[in-house]
Image (cartoon, rainbow, N blue to C red):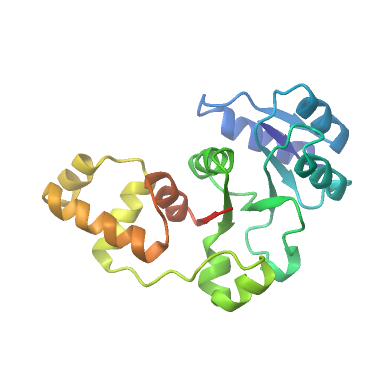
Length: 208
């Protein structure tokens, strides 16, 4: 995978954060041509690129066209950015805050590689369904409120705990844990543990 950012310190920090998980071969790039060269080599499965990267439009166009071995690209930006400030240009598969922790970034990369899109959950919680549908090309749905126990389960899912570990931590039976997890999936609009973990880290997962 590749990190593309015009600020050296930011791209190196993001690359180090993802590399610390040991799951990815991470390359960092300061310009579009470096990313495209890596894509041509077939060594790039996912790109996280700054939305302010010079030439970002050219990068998105090339990678979505298939000319450079079609690769999913998520934009990187400030956590508090509103959907209207980004607009998710054609070719972008989502948006991630630059300050997302290593676990959230790792989940996001896996999700993008699987063909899904990712968005900050705050866009949906704060902006409402209509705003996100209009500004993010009609993808997403507003999550329903979680109960206190459901929030506890979601947090533990975000930490990567198994059902058995969650049950032990919260003193719940296996059946009760499954019921809470099913409720979390339904209310958050997710389909699996990876998506739930992303949601727990403040990143919404959406079908592409």
